[in-house]
Length: 253
Image 1: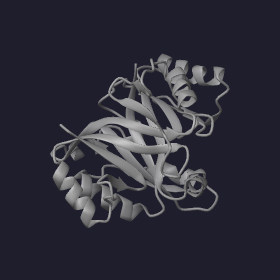
Image 2: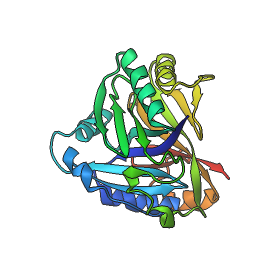
Image 3: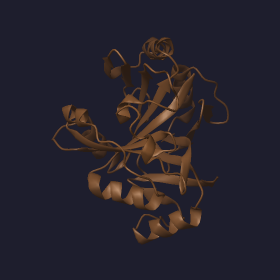
Image 4: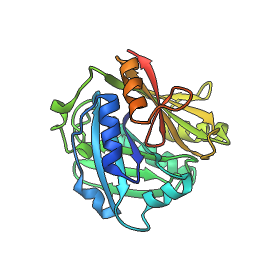
């Protein structure tokens, strides 16, 4: 079993981006991870239902996130972070990646939490991170958010949950097969299904090349979200909410 648990965006200005996201989407902040300073970053996490939206921003020169900002011409989607249902499953996904010649960009093995980040160039879009949490709870304890202290910060009267992620590129057939093979799921109609969400693959049409271009959200207040987005300059000419260089597609709960 594999579940979308967290999406990470990268921004040049963390404070402004968090202000946009919390105001427009009606969500709360819940955790700041001091450990990301090791990578030359600051971050903030926000619960989306019982899953998470993270934003990172470089605080040093020559970071992977900084290079990603340069390559994609500004703020945008950065990581798709999944939770495997067991340690055995996480190791299986890791081996599937190695069998395809996909590079591991970073990994860490701990007593209660394993991380495996796959290189975005090899995944043809974004980092794919597959984690294992020792409690094996796909809707509860989550070490990247500090455990379980975030539960009181869940707010679902505006934004309810994730429905999926949109990955864009030039060769979406190859990209789709690669993601499906690593995640061990079936692919159909330019999409793959995880336990709780869908990853869609679309042609890049915004001039930004391969990457994480959009997020599908289940929401209760489409008009309110769009009104706040327009006030903050985050509604594009097509009426799509665009925050941190990422399109947010709103689906009524």
